[in-house]
Image (cartoon, rainbow, N blue to C red; front, side):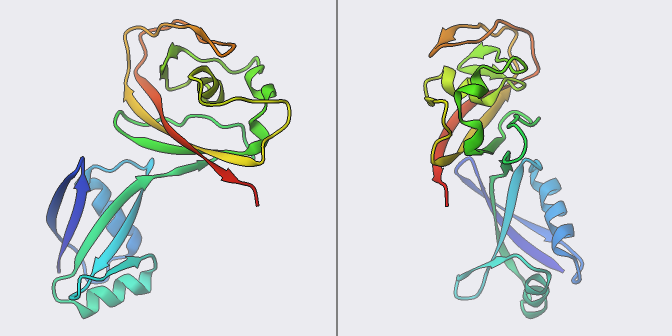
Amino acid sequence: MIIKIRFKRDGKQIARKIDIRENISLEELEQKLRERFDISYDQRVELHSLDEDDDRIVVSFEDELALILASQESPLFEMIVKPKVVDSFYNYPKVSKSKPGDIVEIMISSKWLTTASITRKDTRIWGTWIFTDDSDIIKALVHVGKLELTEKPPEYNLIVAIRYLPGCLKYVGSTNEGITSEDFGPHDTSYIIESFRMVALV
């Protein structure tokens, strides 16, 4: 059967028709959409069904997908891509590998948001504002002036959105907010800190 998918990328709406099996699983459909629209696994895919009244229905379970495919002659879906949140509650937060253009959210537990994290000897950062993708995220946050830490964990967790960029031939280090970054280069992938938000502890 033929389904139609709407997808907005860089402010432009793209629509494509895709031929699928009527009994396709949600996982198989997501895989097909990732391949067709070139969506990395560092991003989260949400599928919404649009019915005849243009109501939006989130498709999260196999039976929901099966019902839509069985009841609509030409199903119309909208795909929404969001940053995937990397949870670092148990392990010290690290920047995962990804490709230029991707945005990934990293959840940093309150327990890592202390001065102990910026005095660690096993973490370093390379660059200024634009960092190598193996640079420590907490030291980078402090270095760019977005975070002040104390010895005591704060009453919030932090969700940081980073954007991956192409690598640089040279990264120039500097000292800022008591953190010294280093020179390096060349390197294949970079990141910048796009935004962050605090989530109160419950």
